Length: 484
Image (cartoon, rainbow, N blue to C red; front, side):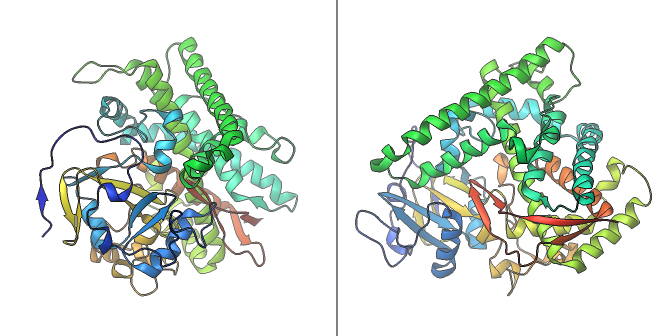
């Protein structure tokens, strides 16, 4: 049994805390063998693929390991038993570090980037949680259908012209429009843009730039920060554009007066039910940015991976389509209640999220002095990065062939047979994603509509490659469509 002792209080130091500050026995944790003095574990590393590099090292070193680069050392955990301990809210809490902390100049104390001690997190959570209730979700359903209709009109045109579709681009358009319209009553007009001529919406370009810069800050050492001066200027411009866009969204709502009771209305009008506190204008901006960015980036990746696996596995696609036809019948528009009945399609989505969780890691810090796994002492504030992509591949939880795509892993009897805390695509604990049910309903609805309308075929010879920008996305994924 792990030992827990109360550590002295006090405020933990801000900024990056290297592992030697919180793990007294780092010698018990393996690291790559080719460690270079002063530089660290950089042999074979690729600054564009830090998650995939860590996955490769994890397979070599086991369920807990450490990596060091230019004086910064990080402990990684992916073993199911250790991850279950880190999910214990009495011993561990969310740690805001690495790329998440790099987003704070943009998102501040928004729900995703707030430090645990910042009061606006609890205030915003309590005010906004009813916006994800069942009744609220049912109210969003017609808008989700409308945006999905825009996607299918665009895909119909591509199919008629014999063109393949760029899946990540179109899923990003879809999810941005969905969260913007359902949450904030705003239309970016993404499907009205000619992507080949105009490129993505500037909001998407700015968002991708901000996410990519946050990841780059993780891997460029302070001594070489001069290399980021140009990128810092671009990032400042990206942040300014995102802020201006959100300010326009908020101003339009204030000018319109009464709104539809969506998330933005709750931010502007609803006080905390117990304290009577309200969100400040600055925090409202941060929350809107958080929802617009986090609320579409991860869902677009989940949809893209699911469509890839469906196209690569015709037997799974046929079974999922049969379920859609059987459950939805010949109705033109599925009702809200019919989406949750697509249980096999939901398994497809979960299995895609298992193999490639679009939020590929989350960090946890010790709230008191403790010992992880009975072996590794941790001081209060010591933190570890849970590598979700490898937790979801741990043979101890997922069997001998965890790389194989198999939706039956999420059949009820299989779920019951697995240990707890081994499937974490939305994080864990009190700080897990508040929009989880929103994302799952949206993704299941869209997949059902697309399967009912199209046959999907991959491009010949396509091999899945992963693009990393804090989140994960299939790279250069195109599908060929045939109307059913």
